[in-house]
Structures are given as structure tokens and as C-alpha cells.
Length: 322
Image (cartoon, rainbow, N blue to C red; front, side):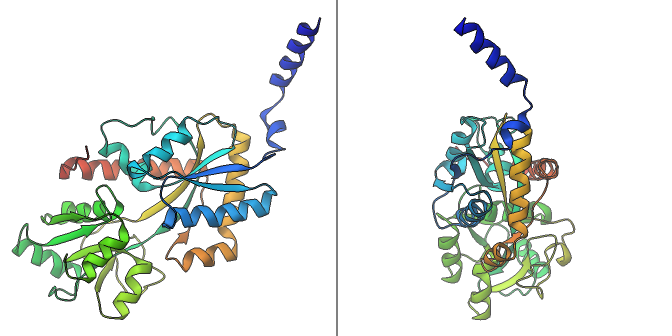
């Protein structure tokens, strides 16, 4: 008798629309995986948004930093988490658009393991040279690189980072060859440029701005399709002779695949609302990050194009990470 009653109750619960459960979401704290160490841009975005979501929902959104393997460890954790909305991911395009083309194997299916929530923000990078390099714009840099093939040295935040891939894209589209010296993070890479150890690098705008004003590096162009609002006087690389060039660090939020549409819709609504909040926009702008916000479908289309672009660059440039 009891078993029969339980079966009937279970059947009734299964028959209820998913929205009934989503109405009470979140009913407890939510873990937000950031697949990088504390202190970086992804971590900062995660913490600012987590605080805002906590304010909006009345439940704690708690950051859990799981760094390692270029962000793929954190992605792996989320891919194996229950699809109930209580484990989320804030990632960057170095992992969700670039890593699948760099690594022979991943512990998850990049396309099938996640439910996209929203594109969150974009961080422009500034193509910069050491002041000793006798160029003042992108055309002069390309001319110098062609005159001295394989001798100009560029630094990056590490193999597969957006600063690395941006320079590979620059070489791919302009037909020049330069030498890559990777560092462990954007900070050490920028310091190498400032110290003259390397000749050029793509530097985050928030880092490039004060050093450009101090004359310690020379900014040539912004990596994004539109000019940076922090350095509006600086042309884009596309404006400087390489039409269509676009590269930046972009950030997005995900849930595990299988998360109900109602929970995805609720999270998307609150994320877009948070990204439009004046205090969130100001905090991120002060770190050189511009908020975006999108529907899940818009992000899927964006990421498809982003993945195709970087996959092509990686294949044609012969980039490999073991």
C-alpha cells in the first residue's frame, strides 16, 4: 500500500511542469566555480556578480576557485555536477573557445557538457611595444617584422592565453613571424615588456593605460572591433590595416548540461539585470572590463564563431600544447 502511494506521488511530481520547481530556485546557497586563481579578471567578475545575485535572490552565491590546466579543471568539475542550478561556472574564452582546439583530450565534451547562461563581459587588450622599438603604429610594426623575420620577441600570459592567441592571429593575418616567450600570467608578461626583455605584447587595457601615460610602453592599437572606452583615442587593429581583426578576453556563465530551461531562464534574467546595474558596470569598468549580457542563444552563436576563428588560427599556426 505504502509503495503504491509513493509511486503515485512520484508520478504526480514528474508530471508537474519544471517551472513549479524553478519558482523556488534558489532555495539554498549556490556554488560558483571560477577555474582560475583568486585575483584575476575572471575571479573579479565572478565575485562582483555573485554578490549582486546574492542581493537579488536572498541566497548566497559562493565563489569556489578551482585553478589548473588552463582552466579546464574547473570546467571538468562543473561538467560532472548535478544539473540542478546549484553549481555554476564563470569561464573565459581561453577555455570555452580556445582550449578544445589546443588539447588532444579534455575530461569533458566542451559542446555537450554545459548549458550557457549569458555572455558576461569583454576585456580589450592593447597591442603595445617597448619604447625602444622604432614603430608608432601597426603598419610600421608589420613592416619591421617583415624586414626582420623571426627576430622580434613577444611575451604572453602563457601558451593558449588570449594574449598568445591574439599575437598568433596578428602573425596569421599579416604574414609575419615572431618569437613567442610565454610567462606565467599577464602580470609577469607585462613586466617582461616593461623591462625590455621582450619587444611587444598584448596587454590588458587596465595595465597598459598607466604605463602608456608614464611612457614606459607605447600603445599601438586596441584588439577589439570597437575602440576601447578607456583609450578612445587609440585606433583598433582593424582600423590600422588589418580589416576584420578582433581579439579580446571574453567571459561567460554556464550551468551543467541538463539544467532545466526555467532555471536557465531565471539565472539569465538575474545575470543580465546584474550586468546592467550601475555599480556593477562601474566596478568592472574601473578594472578595464566592459559588461555585455546576452541570451543563451546569442551566446551559443557568438561562441560558435569564436571557436571557429581560434580553431583556424591554431591549425594554421601549428600551435600545440601537450
